[in-house]
Image (tube, rainbow, N blue to C red; front, side, top):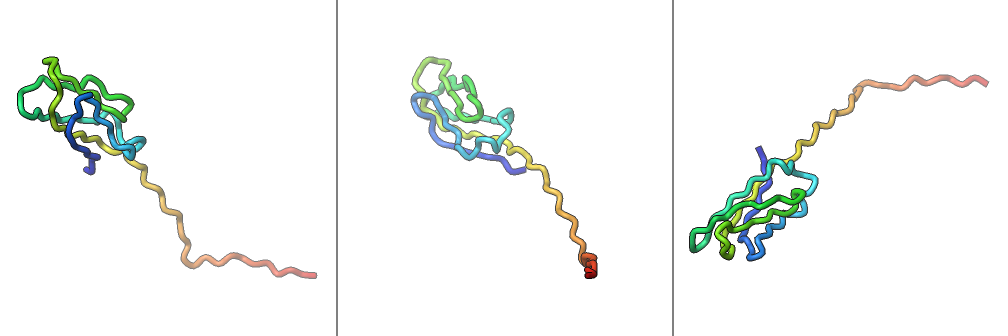
Length: 99
């Protein structure tokens, strides 16, 4: 199954901005965040996910943030569009006009 994925480094403000092309294309309830501390151990956690557009990260130990992140989410399934019926040998009926 195809998933949307983005990764990078968490800034000191702890805000991860999700890509704009995710909006309306993902199921927000499937967002998963993986955090990897850089340098020293940190008590990293996801404080909240705002409207499927931002992820707020905090350090439970109170220290500054220094970590990598990977965020994944499942796409919204687009219903398969039904193909129109094509009649191969269809010829419209014609009426002869009489004067």
